[in-house]
Length: 218
Length: 175
Image (tube, rainbow over the protein chains, first blue to last red):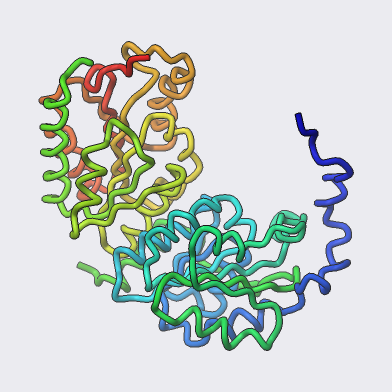
């Protein structure tokens, strides 16, 4: 019987205290406050579903908490699948899921489900800072060797890309907007705080706001 | 088996027709023998979207997204899947999203597999704790009227409803 891997001190591996050391070598250099807006461009072209905390604030700040965004603050692991349901319901609209590495990792099987259906109007943007920012910047698996782009590609999503510096932004932006199949972009960013935007946290009010804007009051 | 396969085929076909008549277009499921006909019909139906899930909680989130886009869906699962959904049900309760799920029960009437009892017996208290209304079906002639009522409770009444297809209805799996 094979033994467990030896020599990995998990407490040291996930400790937040040395968060910055070594990150540049792994490509966590972009500032999310600049890179997310640069990658998305004209936000009015998309319906957004976001993850919790970081990406919710990124997109709320970008859109001034617009009626075309649905941000989460709980039910972690649901963002990509909410995006799939919305994309299947509205093939006439482009749906962009913006979520973090931790939120995506919690239900990473969703990438397999999405790859099988491959809706052409769905794009997933994973803003990957390698950390659980909201809980004190503990390292996530993507700081420890897990590659979400490879997971997405392994699931069968054909159009994938990792953007880790400014030279990759234009190609990443194109991928989010092209309509040949579901797109998956990892945006590697520094583990810095997102914009301090105060968004509406009421999930029922945000549902009504979104549906009224998309479907009309009746 | 409490009923023959022909009997089950009849109400499952009627059930699929009812769901489609009431504008359900997204069929999400983790494969399950109890829902075989609904799953096969959704795969063969160009007007429906058939979504195979890796875990049931994906389906809860999917149906929230369907609602945001103005579409209706149904989540098909076995009772063990309820346990996988619990935190994602926060989304439905907090967001007042409609949720229709059809649950084929295990760990219930006549169950022979001891592994199925802990979750099977916890289904109703767990769903009720998360604000999901449970409707139990024990006889074949109750299936269509119960799901018809559930469709109204969900898509007009704005509730989360689980229709529990019991082992008295489906028959206990033989080992």
